[in-house]
Length: 251
Length: 257
Image (tube, rainbow over all chains, first blue to last red; front, side, top):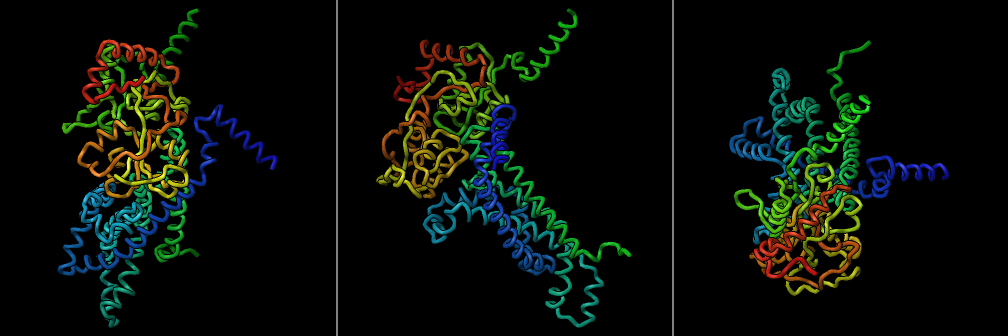
């Protein structure tokens, strides 16, 4: 207890006299940053989950060049990969809200009037577009031998996709997917521009409330770095497990 | 002796370098906003106009200085001043105790009240209990944020980057109320097509500790610029320049008492 107090006294004195940052203020508002981190994590991982599930059938349709679907999905992925996420979010949030027909529709009050849903929809469609394209790439690079072997073994096309093509495509896509996860996390800061109190939103709130330049941003930055660190560790572990066959054999 | 001179010279060089060469540069850089009509707005061709903009230009003329207007979003206004992106803020900034901890202010150059806006006929009770759960929108990092957090802590406060976004969401029905400067609200919203069906709610708010004592020009602490600017404000008040600009935008004299 005594040690804690003296540390606290030290921190207060340090903040007031020497430090360019006010650590006391940051400490006092840490709970808000944790709440913000929760919003950030929720949005990021829900978008990745839903977007990832959407991407699988779309990537299969693209890779197998299914007649009507392939061009439609191409237009969709092109539109969402070709425009900034900020613009997409603004279109869903401010754009749709301009139309009275939208405001009077049944979708307005539960979903489209809520910034959280607007942001989730925009993030999901965005990450689904990127994931579709690199999953398509991974499916298309399936070695011919694997396909021939599965045909020779009498597998139906569906069984082949489920047991051979997709699992191996996931493996090939795994290292690239960690980038997509991190980019989606970084992109989630856009939530703060439409009033959500995500990590950056809390940082900007703190800066705005106390007219500060750094404290809010520095704290948010440390939180993002911590989250990225955890994501990197998780992918390292996943690669160790799923890409075991690619490592040199030891002993 | 010679050593002292060299030392002084290099110390001076370092000092000049650290102040960003402001002493050397004649150009006065003024931070302004661009989304707060009629105080500041952007014309179709991208140029800035408005009361704040013209006051800034008039002050520069009075000071006989070259001026450069630097556009900055509201929530980065004071940080950018401290980071020496510009030397003074002419952007409808209220003089408050909180801000005085970070910057120096001139005397006020105008003073207008703050008031809520809601749908016409809305009867919200402006008390702590009455505003619980109400969605109140306002510009991030303003005196209004301080006011609502202090007096209506249970309201659902929504913070925006620009005042235009606040109005857009009020119209879209995402907000129950919004709070800002009455003159800005009249010209930027209530007197426009967008503001049809909306009206002021309650009385002008009163809390000097949050809302401040008028609108001033912010400069970095200890910068002698504030004395020069004070003289310039009084000068344009006296020579009629202020009145000319004021009358262009408002029917009343917004300088206050």
